[in-house]
Length: 476
Ligand code: BG6
Image 1 (cartoon, rainbow, N blue to C red):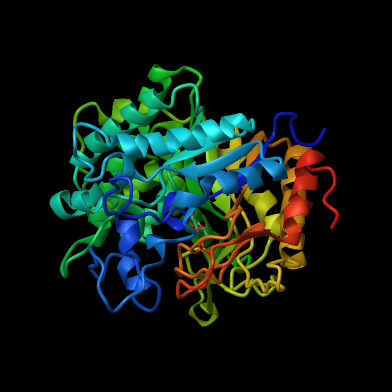
Image 2 (cartoon, protein in one colour):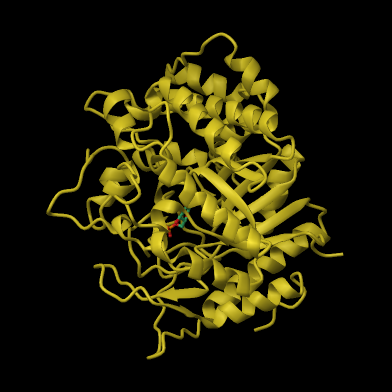
């Protein structure tokens, strides 16, 4: 009982939040590089403040991040020491195609990831690769308007052809777009979209979403053609919505919110635009431009598994008096009075994790993969860099238990679990280093000071034991 024997335990990172080396190895500039820390971060990631290059007034944490570009061997060795079965990471598009629209890829970029995958192989770690984790080459934004243009589908297709062929036999698990629903909430970070005054934002976002959905289906098609062993997943920023009360209006509001997110997965997993989304677009005057054959492609190439991130549940209400907002993974939500929250206001709800796993499995009946979960917290290391992060252990233990209940008691088919930010890295939402998720502490602060030295936290040995016992021993 419990988790399957080949359960894929591991951790997750994203290129732009850990690699650094933004101008090394022939890499081109990407949207994720030019997102600063500080008060302008949200206006930039939401596409309302245009920033397509660096300036002197801001600090850009992704330029160096935790410099994994030069530390990857050491980092993978630490992951192996914890017993990782899988390592979720992303490739930086602009390392492979610096501009995005070239015909030929950049060999140095391809080699960089090949070396990483081979290193993983050495330790028996199965890479789980996100093809796009929020990144889009700046050139594609400047010349084509990023995903608002259909041409991006072709450039992405080219990227997929190159990496699927090059990494055949090294990588089997692929995710097409990280948190695809983020396009609605952080359109510049999620899809390179910028808006001008007077733009019809909803029209642009849903058109760009159509392009990404199409690109995802084409990637799935090519992945299967190149190697029938390949398994392709979609990726959702998940977290069930609760109605604030049993008032029917609140229940209806929560359903609407859930649907806004599930819309993407409905298309990627069932292969069709759901009726509710078509109606919603019709009411909003959104007209999707589609080419002949698009709908057939979506229908024919659905994903093999569903992956998602879970940090928190969310709450919906129609009562204006109750609209006290709390933070949570870009999405602001109504505060749930029954839950505690992290230092960043993300509400902690392990049962919500079980509910979310069940909701998704009930809806799609495909294998699931939890590819992000964790606690962002302020860690205070001692003089040796050691952090006694019992708070993180207790968050993770409760969530692993909830996940186990979903598997053991409810019968959810779960392939694996990768905690977010298994090594400290730059926060996507805030740009801070101070918001840490890792089992491994990295000596670097919000201003870019620090030695970049890695050291094990208390949770390092705890997670090692969890993996060794296949989730049986969660004790601290
Ligand atoms: C998800 C992203 O939104 O949540 C990650 O896929 C991100 O890139 C993670 O880092 C945690 O969010 P944050 O804002 O705490 O970094």
